[in-house]
Length: 355
Image (tube, rainbow, N blue to C red; front, top):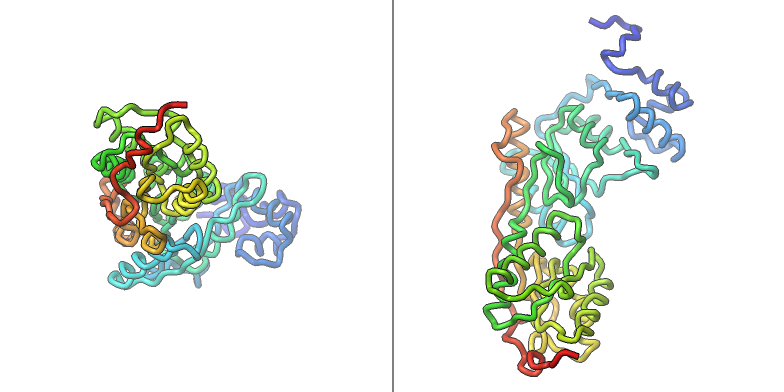
């Protein structure tokens, strides 16, 4: 047993030690630990770095006991249709499980690579029994803090490959890329380009890999110049499409790895006087509501975001009960939704000679 006032570090550093390390008063260090806003950014940074460096563990208060019926959902943003679908799935599953959900946007990070502990301190202070993250990845330090506080968590469609042992739920992105490309091949297209998202994200890598695999299975030559990346930038998607159209043999079809990039692709085609799908076919990925609103309505690969989110919540409930999933990665199947943006290749384009 550690006596009151003991300097035994087995229980971790005291707040006074942290304050001394950061060169601030104990009350100021306490404000940072408790997520108070009335602290200067530079002071907050120094205290946060000291907390991480010394391995300070926030002591639970008697009024902050873990609340079994409360979970946190951290979204990458609150104003997108994908976030709305995730929130819908989590809320429905939480209602069935008798849980309440606290929603917040993003994981704030300090400059210089440190982590802002405020969101985690608030999570522990309100006694959340678990957490879900959608398209927003904790830093290594933040992962460590979650483990340190023994807060179970599940990643919904993580951006990057999670550390070993982290549970995640997402779509079958590779198979979705195969499905999109096979649809265009079945229509008779061979000059099929791909406009991918960020080349280092899990989804971006898998979807482009599926595209390449489908071409190889069909015996269609892979053309490296047909592979472009636009990250998550609609304007960049427009520029990448213009680059594809300037090739000696421009593509007759484009697989766009995110519906959010499709308006940029449509814009580029319109600039060149090309119609969809009469001149160039376009397939997207996600089946966001916008897919039905644009003209022509987009043929796309549907990933079931609400079902993915609900599955993640159910896995989290199991983990909160002490059960560990057999697999750390769960993938839900995708399917093609055919609309008006694809058709057989235009004869005039397929006969364009190399320049």
